[in-house]
Length: 92
Image (cartoon, rainbow, N blue to C red; front, top):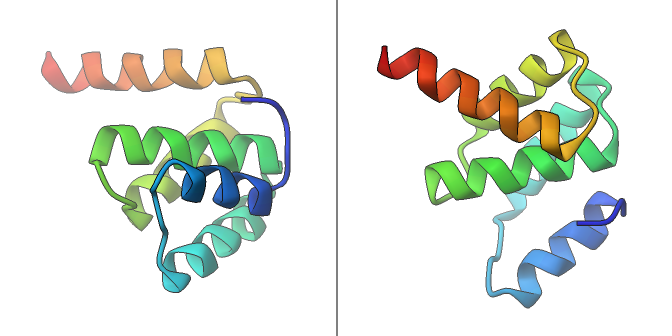
């Protein structure tokens, strides 16, 4: 995924048949403003949320953004490593 705007990412999702509700897109924007994360990291958070939860889950999305911010995560590779770490912690 290249770095593009959240609106571009919504269009990318729509082209794959994934349509988010208006309330979801509003919540996504809220999360971006709340955490101050970049469009790139917001898009990664959406991607991971959809892959893990199989639908958009606002609380999961916000938790990811907050975790990314607290841990200074700024790349896709580090984001996935962080999520894998959390999954390992939950299974122990």
